[in-house]
Image (cartoon, rainbow, N blue to C red):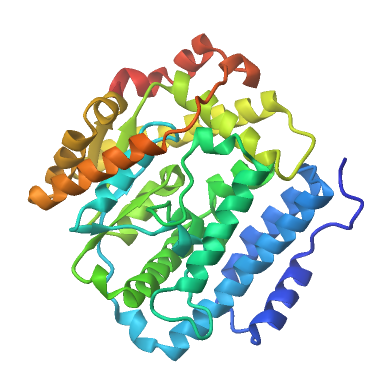
Length: 384
């Protein structure tokens, strides 16, 4: 049943955030456009349940409050703006291509760092909180448990962690410009609009968030960041320009598995906020979305060949430690015993964390193996 409550309102969301944060110093209001498109799409397309609307309103309001809290934090600690953020790698393969395993293995290296799950949920300290971030960690753990209770099958699709490396794109949500929104909600108008939007301001803000996290954690001194999200495929040139030392690590897998698997994941997430989900529409939408993203990759890669590292899915699965070591070498690092021990430690941990099988078929989502092979031949024939 859809909600009888009124539509979401950008003005009401902003007013609520200002009241909660105690100031209205948003700075450049560029974020209003993506927020307005997103809210419009949620109101007209997402078919939110009453609970789904409550969750969406709370989530968007909290993201706006964090934008304001970031400004307060920078004003209180102006030195944070001078923190030197160096990104070594941006893992960019489609979902379900081994990118999570590779990301978490690389993040385990003592030479690298990544955003932690609890930091993605709560990147700024709460008043009175100590350097150990005890309050934020406890709340992040509670949030993870509540999320998995609402969607018990999700853990079989993607290993959710609050105390391990997680996609920094969750921090980028605060710019209202990520595929997280059209993955979690049926919001195709927003997703199509985002493809043509200049995301340069979003990535400039991501750098600011990484500065804040690096400043809070002295152990990150001298370590370089490894980022990861399929969303970055929508803005490859922007990513490479914003992080000039970084290389794109592209994980490759047959789209006949990757596309329907992600559609299944989106269906599981959308079910938390809507009782009316069309799996065929979801599958076809993400097939089109990923075809466009890979088209951009195929066009950009030859122009900037020195900025890319390729990783086959089979290599990550069959020899995760060796693959992580090879990628680090390609990134210009000397791989030592401490790195290999860290890779092996995470490999063993990952094997223990494995949950049930993720079961789906392409046909559930209006797709077929023959159609996917045909539509993505321009990519698979060149890179698989």
